[in-house]
Length: 346
Image (cartoon, rainbow, N blue to C red; front, side, top):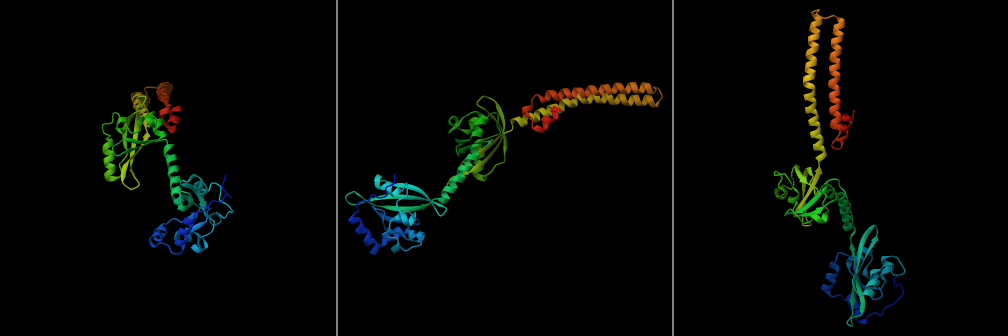
């Protein structure tokens, strides 16, 4: 419940100090107060503005003399009382710093209230500061969105520090390797590599440090269950807030099924050549011999028809052989792209 009506006893000592600062402010204190980019003012125990800095005057488009002595809520919020959740009211009760996120003029501000106590330790007022956090929230929202994209990517995305210890592990990596994040964090990325002597993770990180880019590489990785994966590995540098290189982000695309499909297709083509070459060569030789016999008058039309029919039968057998080979190859459909599946199903 918002404290709307309760009046607090105000400290005469604190009010006297504030009045002196209004009339004849201490030079360096005023300089420090006005040096703040954020709008700020000092309030009494009942929410009256006692002193404000130049940033608050500019923010309100009013001079200090038209701001001091007034309650904060009609000026800032246009209300007759403290707003629900007012951090000043909370601080007045908790005697601690309180904060509040407020949207004004299509921008977000963080309101910070720091209590001020008099010589007897009683709540005398507070320092009220507006911090423009709109751009920060926008950046955080963009980062959160990017984080969701990374987290839900079908590719495995793994980040490491400069010592190649794993610092990030998305769901794609979990699905790909079978390890959850807790099992791999802070472990060496090298432990995941298997049977890839040509891949040196440490060398990749060193190359990123020097060139900030690398070409994608093929590598083999072993899953938690022992299955071997054919992976296309890419890497990008990761920079910290000071723009210093702090690690690497590895993007892993599983090409295992694609590689298997390529092997299946190559096997099919090899087998097809072996099954077709000799029979077709024989059929061609037979047809040439039959035509020579017919040209020389050694066979009549009826005999020609019978001999050609035999070659057609032989051709049908070759085609049946190829169809059987296609069916055998089609058994491993999961490893094939759709266009290949359609071919082998026909």
